Length: 259
Image (cartoon, rainbow, N blue to C red; front, side, top):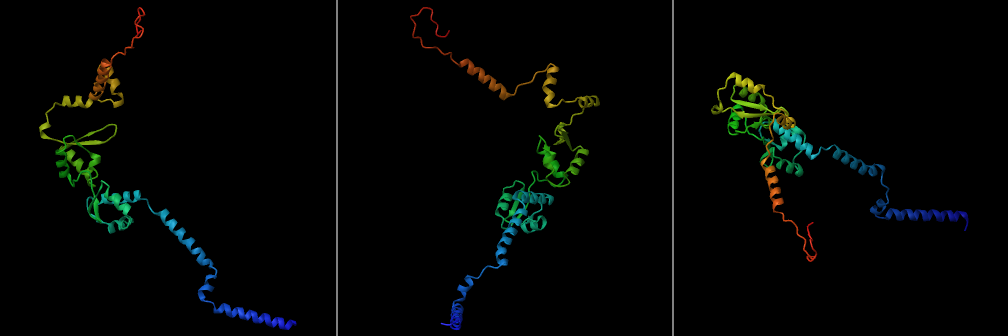
């Protein structure tokens, strides 16, 4: 067979294979189609975006902190989830973990499933409320606990102290104030000399109190619990029987098993 015939046959075979490929179903041919660079890179781009979003997302603790602080600024007014989202930027809907944390927070009170408010330790709104509250607490209330009730608490407390309707005792170490109701029945007239003498006495710090009392010839009084413990140990020691070794060599003269 000459060269021309071989060339013609090769062209015929090539044309035949070409027609067979065109006759195949489209899904078979598309199956072998290589993935373009843009498609191959798209999943990587999406995963990177999601990772960045999760990284920038605040923690549950941070969201609870922001929400509670905003509720506190509202002074007891109720607010919805939508309003909180607009104010704090935190989406509460769909975040069950955040909702559970808010429902178990002692500073948060729910009116219904989507409405809540701040819950202070003492629910007072003005100076008259403070006065009524203190009259029911003869052992006093810490000013720091009262500050949670509303923003103008300190101004109202100062007004009540100036009018002598309440009085405050300050802890020199913690610098905190304990507020008390000024009850008329406890007001006893005192001379100015006695008042000046009272004010002139400086109490020592707790760490120096024991030594100061010793220097003054005074002794510390034991607490009732400590006294009970010491007494119990004495009774236990007294009732403890002395162990006696069984005598097996009683025939030996002058033998003492406990010597």
